[in-house]
Length: 91
Image (cartoon, rainbow, N blue to C red; front, top):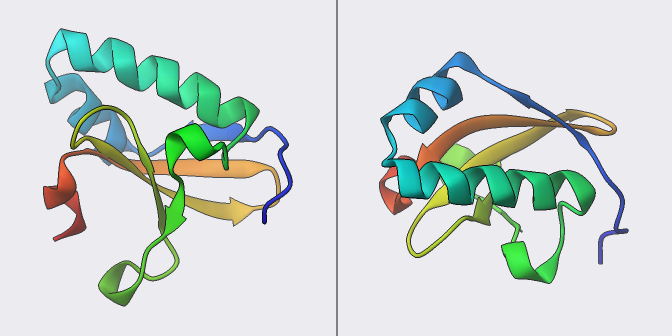
């Protein structure tokens, strides 16, 4: 089990572009979930989980419906958001 503590969130340019392409109603949800993630990245509500295969080293957490955020933890206390979208981002 992971200890509940906050992280500083950083984003990649790819994440920023993907975020900008989302419908406005989903963008609001993403902002809310990222704030929740900053406070407790392993909240059961977010369903944060480690990925495998070609995405080994990455994690994912839930936004709404089929939308997910792809994230890594490059150093202690920092989360780097790489992508946001449907399960297609795993491909």
